Length: 242
Image (cartoon, rainbow, N blue to C red; front, top):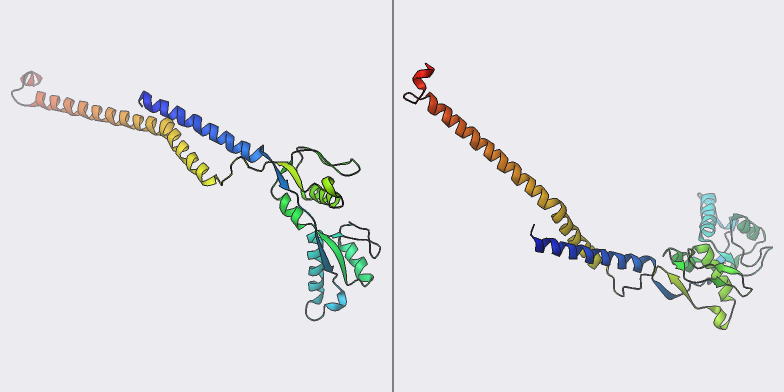
């Protein structure tokens, strides 16, 4: 490989490492203010056993309760012995069913769940009105912390409401989607590195092996020709051998 080619590969490798570093920084360390998730207020119908009849009524009734429990709804107000903001589980559904409550107002945490799926981290300490920590800087913004944040800030007014929060790991360093560009650069850099590290040495080794085989074949051919020439009649030394 020529000196110019080696210099080009060094520069390409350096550019690749810098680009990789920027990509990782944008993915893991970039900070930005984003709208915080809020709880949705909705009316939840409470499954009543007598409303399910016919074939497999018990299975349909249990499935309806299970879907409510998995959704993670919170009571919006105290009712039927349940407290406000209390998570609705199987026990709470049984209590509401026994109290003959047809429907209740609940908080739907799905926006918090969708926000938590982004695996962002808090960029600053967040406290409620009483000064208690909701989340500390650097902690993962999971669904539980986001629900606590929504309950704390939704009840406040003015600046304390905090419509936007500072988070880390947003990838805002790249305004456009750089994934295709990054994949292309990654492929080119990998091809250049493999060409320098693997392709040229392998080709050189194969060329040397092929050259050595050719030289051995030529040497064997010459030795055979010389031996046949010595055995030929009239050749010098042929009579002496007899």
